[in-house]
Length: 279
Image (cartoon, rainbow, N blue to C red; front, top):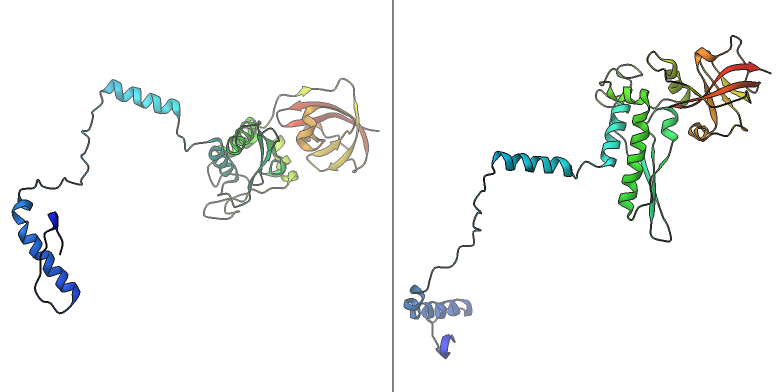
């Protein structure tokens, strides 16, 4: 065996090459034992623990205030929106019930839309668009933030979100999952809530003269009208449909397609009709 400074060491005669090399190595170790004993011990591989710094009460308060100001990075508009929809639906969301779609523009901007099919009635068919952002992730967060703000502006959805499980619409045990509720109502069922006690909203009349239109649907406690020639930004909320509450229904029921004239008002939920007269 060749070692330091060209020295050679020979081992004992062995049965195979491996044992012979091992024997030669042992002879080299014995020869260099005095030098090896004088070497310093090897450095410890264990990382030295940094001394723990104890903060004063004032420093702790400042640290806590900074954390509250910066917020939890895990809590985003998207996670908050999902939590809000689950509180309204009284169940966990299924795959495909929150749909984000992002469009990329030639200039590099991104704009996202979000659709929440787990929301009740026509809310489940709405689509919210966010601002144009520099990244796809920011665009989706913007859409989620706008959707959440509009949902929270609706009094009945907010009240539904604040109800505990088992106290929502539809009765006990009417959904999937433990203690959950399947609140996938159709638009007519959702509109039944409009005249519930405590569900009244201030009306702001937006028509100066009677508006001409026709009946789309007529029920015992509500109705839907349409007025294609009436232009108002709030008409887009329900694809041009105008709601008639129970208090505003005429005494005589009107068939679908009947021509009517009426006054139009706006409340936080959209357009409504009052003072309805058949033509």
